[in-house]
Length: 379
Image 1: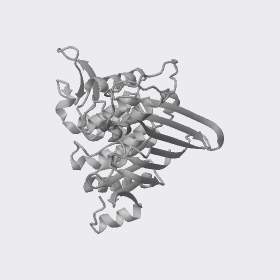
Image 2: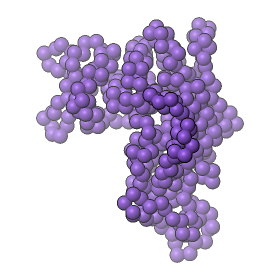
Image 3: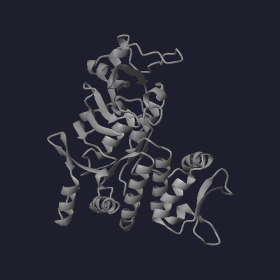
Image 4: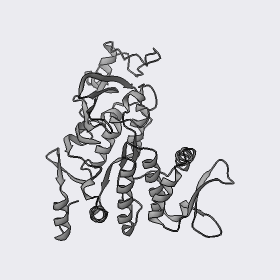
């Protein structure tokens, strides 16, 4: 369980820290206050996929081009586009099932054109091969500023067991372009499994089908079914079927009718819940990061969703970080967890940008209760 997170120089965050984290952590605040950026930083600390692919995906989710090798692409990850200062993401947590604390640290520094010209040496990959930096420089460089352009990012992961100072994993990762280069022993880096659900993006049936199939092999699909039933109790079973137009695969729900119902026809909210359920079921003992958790969900279903989320998180030993713009979502989370006596699991943090700096304000359960009773807005 992560207890503290600190982020420096990432996206809109000059610096921000969250302390006293719980099992369910809800980040609120205005647009561009850094809620999504905090989830992104955590996804980089516990990489979900090869680093170059992850960087490309994070920018693509924001509608930013992912096929370019321009300095602008790399600089966009740094606070105020100032790549002179390294990005630092730190987390501290109590190791599950073990009486020890662990510290996770990620430092991202830029690789500039001048670094390449001055003989920058990349760490050797486990295969013994060195990646090749690709730049397109003119024969004569007339503008010295171009030497400072960022042509790649250098990732250094430092994982420590604080009870054993000698234990350390230092894994260098080079990302040369969004779609090429880079290496890492992800098994060494990712000490916690994680899943990141963006607020928008096309539902990918093939990806969901693969995750569901893995659960089918492990006879754990009931965990997904029980989650879907919180939104629609009519669902008796869930089937993964091939359709006539090969190679499409689709989810069908048995709701008691003569014909199985395509899940896609039951609304965006059902597909959203399916993604959340699959992420939780396949991330046992890890982190689930959900951006704009209320997306696609009707407000009246939110109490059931929060109850399900809390109970499933406890059952599967998962820590949840979610963002929202919705006042109704905040109220639903508080009331739902109060009703099932899990309110102590909930932490709510409000992000505010003040003079270029992020302030994260923690709201205790008592403060949220008072705000709800007096109709004070906290989002």
